[in-house]
Length: 78
Image (cartoon, rainbow, N blue to C red; front, side):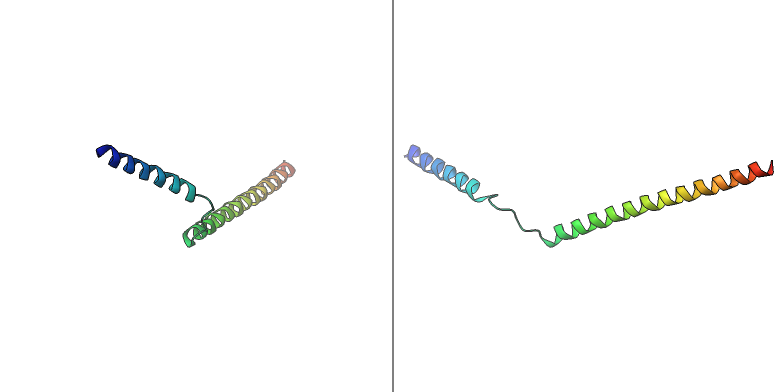
């Protein structure tokens, strides 16, 4: 009798596992509001980073031009 119960229990577990594997992961889950909000935050952070990089490059270019002008003026004064 114990063997019959064990066989029944084991069979049920095997069928349950096969059913779980067959049903799970067959199609992608739709994005929820948290995922959409997270993507929006990521996009905004990426945009800010790009703008800051561009601003830093512009500032560096302006500083370099100013340095060149100062150098020209000091060379002229010599």
